[in-house]
Length: 421
Image 1: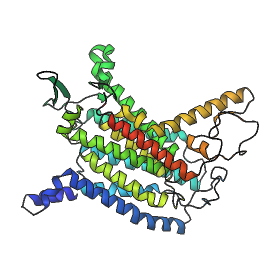
Image 2: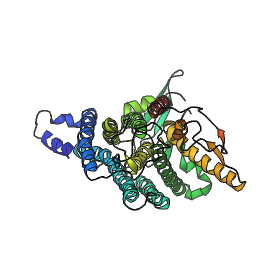
Image 3: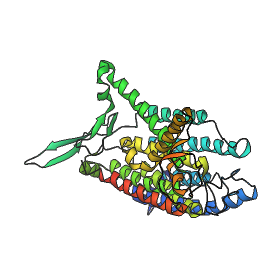
Image 4: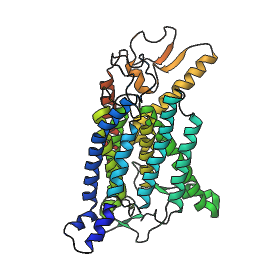
């Protein structure tokens, strides 16, 4: 809203109004405001939640074996994150931008889905929203994002073309026309655009429609997978907020270079006009998470709940899809991937063992972060564990920081893919 106000004032020559045309200026203001809102609003929100006794129904002390009492800690802290993202974006973002609209819809939709899950856990049943309903909600969002990027005339790119000059020197230029594209980036590969339409070339004259269909399916899978991965990662104080803030910084860099034609040419990546609004949104995202960490760091004064974790995963997924970097997700969101795979392996190994009358597990616990805080002798003696590591029990704060370090390494590796091909 302020963006449009100052652009209007610029027509009258008001001093300083031209600053609002600079993405760097608006991004920094967004980052600062989101951090302030998260820290300021968080304090009052926690007090309000405590007064109204809004907290998790129970905490399993066997999962938190540190002597820190977590029962009664307020939940639904994701509301702090959502408010801290939405308010700065409404003030400093261009609300008519298709990418800003998609990000706000993603935030509100998955935030509402997570809120419903948290509310049911507290008021009705500790099992929360049925998994099928969660999956339907995530799938609908994925379909909406994919179809919008397919059908909207504003969601376009300018393709990068490598041109040979004298000698071995190459330059990269972008085609002048804006086009709809199902291309995406393959990491570590030179001339690294993969076109979903070419994959579906066996469909003949229908290959373009088939390519977009594959794109929508891929979008839906990415949204569901990353949203659930973020949800599974939310099991320790500061874990998801810290990991997601690091991932957000990397995505912000990708969004910025993709929206800047000179950087896009230098790095030989697709130029995505108008995607600079993603930088505004990501700055709000990172600021909100850092501010939330003030209260969520160990020992947590508030938990984000599914209200925050589902929305966080969706935001990461949709941002990666918009900038055509969804194939980088396994690297960038490595921790989320490991959390999801650990649960899948644990469940299937347990089922396989049950059919044979044995207590079998792949890890001491799943998701994988829980395996690091199991005390010796805490598990049944007759349970066979294939990967019984570590032998001891790590402090929760140490597990969280080490997971952050892994995410920093993977985020750096993701950024390096811009040059290593």
